[in-house]
Length: 336
Image 1 (cartoon, rainbow, N blue to C red):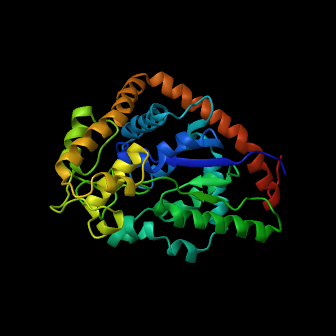
Image 2 (cartoon, rainbow, N blue to C red):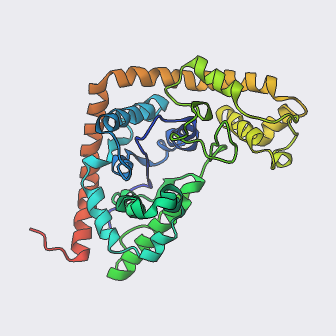
Image 3 (cartoon, rainbow, N blue to C red):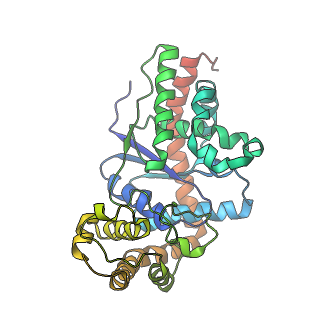
């Protein structure tokens, strides 16, 4: 087996605007990880079409996500950045994994139930089997680690199950058993309007989220309008367990300032949220303002982003081709 250093794979869907949740829950962590791991970061446009997308909007969103990665500090000279659809091996390996995964495994996937809701009979087949594609995304490159949010752990466990079953079915030790990387404060950023709901691109309320395309003034206004409660800030995060909106803002402050939630509670113990929100607004603008401005500059240069994605796709195809060829050999496909 070819030796290589530890490798990570992760991706973001190009649906709607990138949010503070995408930044704190994923992209910011990737910036730190790229120096330690061989890193592959993907705009997962195949995943996006599990629900209908306007084609022109999908192309624009793909460029925007790539621009967001680069503006946040992902270095295309050090990492591979590409869009998923340009590496056919993702879809090809996903089909093989469709034949390895079991129906019972997919029936347990809670995200399908959440996204399909009461209309699951009308949901696309792609939405149902996309965890198999997610496994293919990772294993096509024999990634050893995946930075994930808490809500993606179940899908990573499925990828591990698929890798183990493939190895067992064919009597090989080929695919690695991937390990999760869950890092930092604010692992899961919640809505600014409802502390029990994840910050989402699809929420109808613009005030529920901070978009990475928001201006500095808009970021500050959204923080100041964020829902809290009338009680003072407690000295420990444990004392705020039943105050989801307040706890969410403290977690965001902690993540943006590279502190712990406990540090923030101790600093603001006994204070109300007026001064806290002003400080959080200033902090958010200082961290996110340069990113949003660089994103706009990059998205205005479409040819630059397109070239980054083209180069990344070529690197990804070169990296994955020998792995997929060996999968063909293991499965028994006749190769010319």
